[in-house]
Amino acid sequence: MAVDAGVRFVMLRDHEASPEAFGQAGEALIPWLLERDVQVVVNTRVGRAEQWGTGAHVGTRGPAVDTVRSRLGDGVLIGYSMHRGEAVPEKADYVTFSPVFPTSSKPGHPGEGLQALRDVCRQSAVPVYALGGVTPARLDDCREAGAAGVAVLSAIMEAEEPASVVRQFLRV
Image 1 (spheres, rainbow, N blue to C red):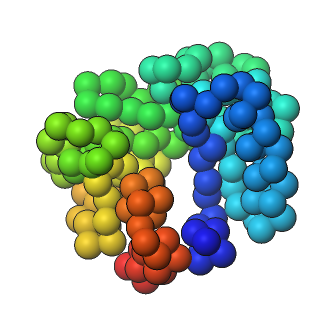
Image 2 (spheres, rainbow, N blue to C red):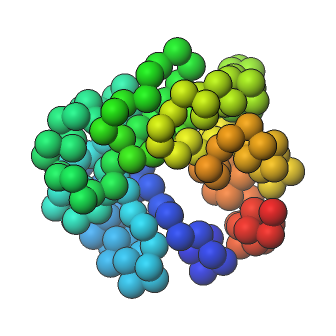
C-alpha cells in the first residue's frame, strides 16, 4: 500500500528473522519493488544485498561502511544508521539520524531533538535523513534543521491507512 501510494525508497530490515525467512521475503519483495522503480537497500545483511544487486545500510550491528564499500563497489548506495556522538563515515552515501523524537520502536527514549539533528546535518557532507517519531506534522521542522528528508517506520507501518499517511508525507 505504501509503495502504491508513492514510497520510492524501501529498506528491508528484520533483525529477528532467520536467514531463510529473510531470504524468502527478499526473493518475493525485491523484484516487485524494482519493477516499480523503488530504490532498495538491505539492512546489515550485506551478502543478501550483493546477491540481490541492491544497496546496503549498516550501523553498529553490521560491518563497517569501508568494508561494505570495498565489497559492493563505488556505484552501490550505502547508508549508515547514526546516533548522537558518532562521526559520519566517509564512504557512506547517506545517513539516518535517530531517534529525533520519541518513538514506539525505542520505548523510553526521549529522542535526541531537533538541535542534535541540526548539529549532525551541519557536520555531514552527505544527506542526513531524520528518523524516529517523524510524522507529517514534524517534517517541516526536520527539513528546517537541515535534513535532506525523513525515514519513516512506525508512522506508516502502524497506521490503519498506510496509503493515507504516505500521501500526507508527500503533500508536506
